[in-house]
Length: 376
Ligand SMILES: Nc1nc2c(ncn2[C@@H]2O[C@H](COP(=O)(O)OP(=O)(O)OP(=O)(O)O)[C@@H](O)[C@H]2O)c(=O)[nH]1
Image 1 (cartoon, rainbow, N blue to C red):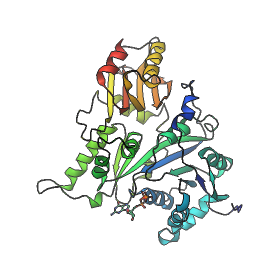
Image 2 (image 1 turned 180 degrees about the horizontal axis):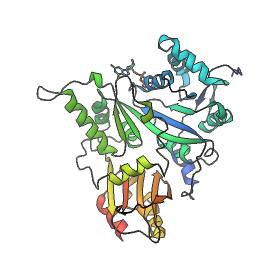
Image 3 (image 1 turned 30 degrees about the vertical axis):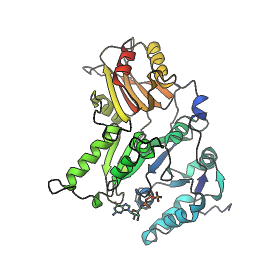
Image 4 (image 1 turned 90 degrees about the horizontal axis):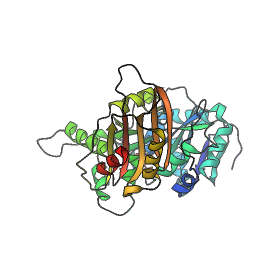
């Protein structure tokens, strides 16, 4: 390990294997997170070769005036490759940015856990505006999401801003089909299911499937397939991940009071994706209820679903708005795996349709079970 104050800032972390180790100790799950003044962390996932490094390089090169640190998850023996890719960026600009943004200690040679790695960054947080955490192609984002969202030692210093999944528009179908009906770990589905933003990359390589269709048709179909899995994710089409940075940085995807997310949630239709093309069982399900809910009963209900897995549903992500009895406040619900929080977000506005609406993303979701459960 070097200790050179002018060297680039990059830290290496081990894979996070135990998704539930933190979750199980987090039974007081519905606590309020304090994220004021903390540094946003954007987790970048995506299948092998989808364009994750391309995205990181694009962000580092862009004129945003931010100091951004990059953490590479599990690069192990590939450390040289990853670092070389970043440092060998086009036109030299990247090198400059990479060095300039760093101003810190380089810690690339020793393996660190995620928490240790972030602690190092936090110590220098006055020098940082944002952290990008690039995972390897086969990473399951669930453990990262759980740990970053709720680690209470970190909550005041870093906050999970969003999970971005880069997908390869040319190969997405193949990748999803690979896991169709398979008992192997469906990373491609999980990466889509956990994403707040999906960059549908490599659209330049998409070609019509037959003489009657166009590339635009193919892209629309792909977007529909993605939304069947995760209807909450914002999909952005791109070539070489050249996207509007305001749509991917400082998203506040886990901010319970974020206006844009609330509005999107309120507009979400009551729906169920009936065409589960891949039979993976991973999909989005949205339910709504016009009556107000009793908060205590609601907590018992959601805990039965998330913790006791009543009806055997495997919930990855859950977001909702609640109309709560004896309250003029619109409450929001967020869950990442077993961990959830419910917080008052704002007053219901005059004339607003006060309802309870919950969007589940997960596996083996059954509308009947959830509805019966909510109404009882
Ligand atoms: N044609 C085309 N090529 C792209 C696009 N985006 C990235 N590529 C190329 O695709 C290849 C893989 O991109 P990377 O950014 O290395 O992908 P990655 O997800 O980091 O790859 P791994 O780390 O190996 O999983 C590179 O050769 C890129 O230049 C795109 O939009 N269109």
